[in-house]
Length: 273
Image (tube, rainbow, N blue to C red; front, side, top):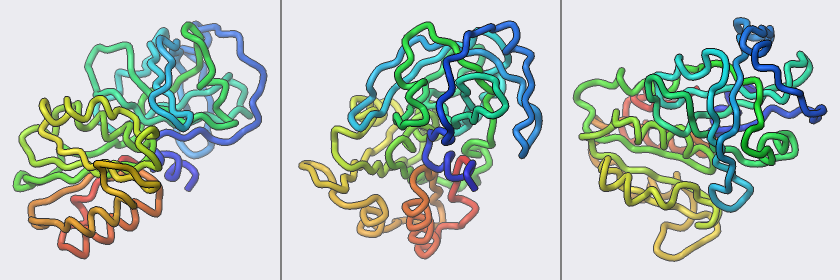
């Protein structure tokens, strides 16, 4: 359940006491294996921070990493997949799970992560450019957009907080181009909404209508919660509608209930976990 909850949040670090900084040795990381206890051995690669800057308020950071060693991004083929990052390879050190915010790009050695700073991941959020960390290969099923039926002509997107990260990847992958796409994006305040400067580009390049929804009020946006905004708008053509969800468990469950009650087939409501 911890893994599911972490992925639902878009990017969340597993909680563990912060150990001392690890002195990077890329050649060892590229071949190091670690049994996580719930899946296959992970062959840890190495990524180096290229950029680390605020994405918006609320301690949310945009972190761009570059692969130095290991097969980290080759498996990244589906928007919504994630990587694990550890401070060191001590088996007692827990990894954080971070959905990839940039779209899959074959051959690319860089990707963006959207990370909300917490006590357990301050070592990552405060790291300077050039700092290297053990990083897993991209994993997870992501959003199975290609499996949607051909008759789907409308796609509703739902994100809250850092859950916008894999939704951004889905939009910028181009896999939704040509459909009617509407994004309900929830946050506390406008200052806490990452990628607000991209809203216009998403509209112009990908045809995405963005509906910001603020729980603590604002002007020129919807106030309240994502699920309330959806209920108010309704679903115009449920038989040909699909949805992508990433956000807090309560939001995701409420949105799923509204969609299914409106007639959207449950198999067309996609999550990335």
